[in-house]
Length: 229
Image (tube, rainbow, N blue to C red; front, side, top):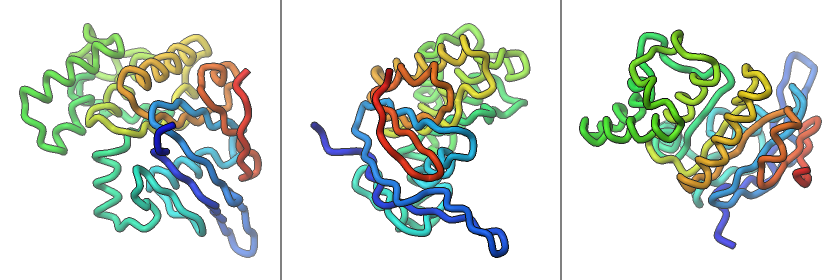
C-alpha cells in the first residue's frame, strides 16, 4: 500500500466556556491513503466538523499532530497554511459557499484566478470541470438560477480547480433531499476515482455510508473505524 496522504496522531481539542469544558476530540488517530473515500460519521455535535477543521488547518488542536503529504499542518504559520489550502486542499461545505453575483463558470474559476493561472488554461479547465459534474450547459447561470443539487455540483467543481490532493467535505448533502444527496455522494466517489484525490466526507446520513471505502465513526470526540454496510 502507498504511503498515507493524511496522518492524524492523538488529536485533542477542548472548548472552554467559563468553568465548563467540552472535549470535542479525544486522542483521535487515523490515516488516509491516496484515492480513498472516507466517510466520517456521527451525530450533530459529535466532533466531525472539529476534526475536519483541524485537518484542513482551519483550527488548531490543543494536542496531537496532523500531517498532510509529510508536512506537519499543526506546525505551519498562517502563510504556509494559506498555501496549503490554496494548493493542496479542496473544501466543500453544506452551505455551498458560492459568490451570488458570479456565474457558475466564474465561481469555478475563482481559485485559478488567485493562483494567476493563464486565462486560456483557466477557461479550458473551467469547461472541463463543469462537464465533469454535468453542468456544462449551465456555465453562465448564477447560483440563484440553479437548484440546490446543481449549486453543490458547482461547489464540487470549484473545489477541484487547483488539482487538490485532499478533498474535505463537511456535510455536503445536508441541505439536499435524500435522492439528490446520494447523487452528490456518488459524484464525489466518481471524482475520487477520476481525479485521484483523497476525500474525507462528514455525514450523519446512513444512506450515504455504503458509498465510502472506509467509515470512521465519531461519538463524543472518540473515533473508531467501522465497516460500510
